Image 1 (spheres, helix red, strand yellow):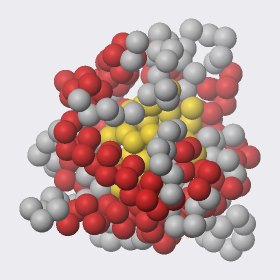
Image 2 (cartoon, rainbow, N blue to C red):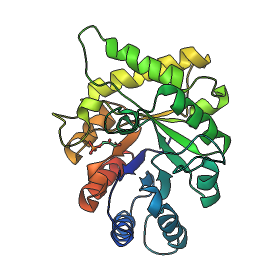
Image 3 (spheres, rainbow, N blue to C red):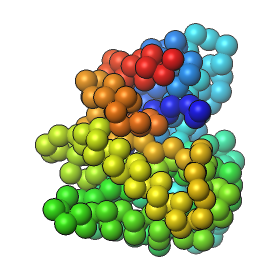
Length: 266
Ligand code: 13P
């Protein structure tokens, strides 16, 4: 069975290196008893190197070994791309995970309007360096005719086009319905809404890649997750983990969620 995974997406927080170090150190200390659950922190690029070094040097101390992930990457390896960060740079730094296709980057108003084709190129590039992509998918709203399923299917099919079949089981797919993300969200998805999508994602990928049962693939959930929802998602939603936004910036809440996942998993 795959390890459950909790990913903290710090988004554009905190505002300086000192605070980032403190948040990271407090988190790893607070999670010292987490053994079976994999934890990944995705800070802004600026803090990645420093936090990765802290993580590597902290092995002997009473802290949780936490992996570092990036929140995005550019598809090309080198060259004239002002303001971009390449996969090779992340690889050289020892980064193991990258979030791709987050709705805040797909967004055409506040984001940069990333489309499925951009995300597809990034996924292929990331895999070629043995880094694990965390592919975010999810609809803006749910319609009665279930068109949102088509929307998610397209995100998966185009986003994973021509990705080698043997790599699919390594992928992490995060179902993040846009309507459930952030302060303005009315509610998180329910565990049954999640389970429906998890089954659907596995079916779309099985059909596309001709794999009967994609064993290693992990489908996680993100969007307004608080500790009260966690058990239900684990028991009834068969969730493989969580992608947390706001609550990854709150050490106490993050720790509570991690402990529930750890304990339910025994
Ligand atoms: P919130 O947990 O703040 O709703 O954010 C979810 C998210 O977008 C994680 O990537």
